[in-house]
Length: 391
Image 1 (cartoon, rainbow, N blue to C red):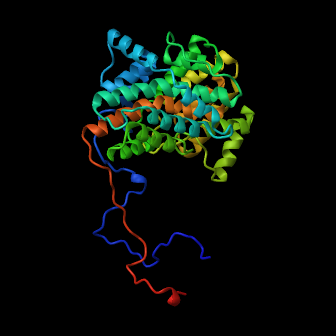
Image 2: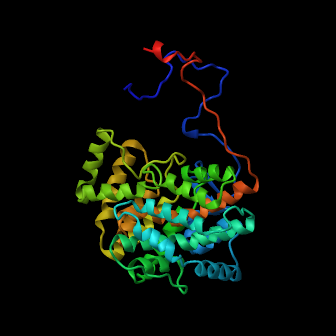
Image 3: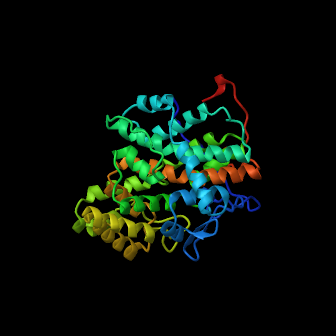
């Protein structure tokens, strides 16, 4: 059998009048958006005009979700109505629970939540109704039900019984309740809430762009969300927070962090949790998340992870001038909260569903199918030979 490999024309010469190929769409502006802005010059990230660090310190995640969907922060009355609706939607059907429970125990939790969201779409008889009101309602349902699905998978993978959601708890409190059967110290809940806010949205990142591409075909909100989950699963995107913690566990000793990083750099090893396509002076979300990761270290007494953080960061910045991204402090923070490593990215999904939904609704409000071009580098047009003449 012939070797299966990509054919690239060895005689290909780029024509000067052809388009400038932007590999990975780097630097390409393909649409407008009012959802968020990453400003690399001022090293800032804003949601609907609000600096993310201010939202993290002054708001709960539900307020930020409302902001994503509606464009403005809620009044007290609007927040109460929004929260009541979200809490009423937290339950999932017995069929959905059964689907999650019957998935292979060794499948990654991102595969579980991808499947669960697809099933939620199957249950919604409004699947083709993409009016703004209906899509907003679907977005709130996903905000409410995804944590329940993630927590159910968390329990089932440990051989434990499902803990139903409560309606008298905040979204973050309820997630801890469903996973562990108890609510931790208020500072832990705050740190978790901050992480959700920081992860909620980040302009046209890979998963958001994927969700918008699907939405641009006039597919449904659930399909676009499932596509976003698939993109987020990759270790170069959402899965990086898991890889950060695996790296720290491998190093184990904070005193070995600097030497480990020096060796990794000498071997040109890819180190997760550092660098960003957009930021050049450091991820604007990191100082806030690092602050709360430090608080987690103080609360739990597990200070070695943040000591390791400092050693790894020092070498990378000194040697390469490459700074941590949000995944670097988020990984150890989630670990100190008690979550299994492979659930870090599903938690990311819980947050980013707000950004995805906002972008999906924005895409549908002024839609044009996203269909870029490519510059062909294969063989020139040729004649098909009869089978007997092929060599």
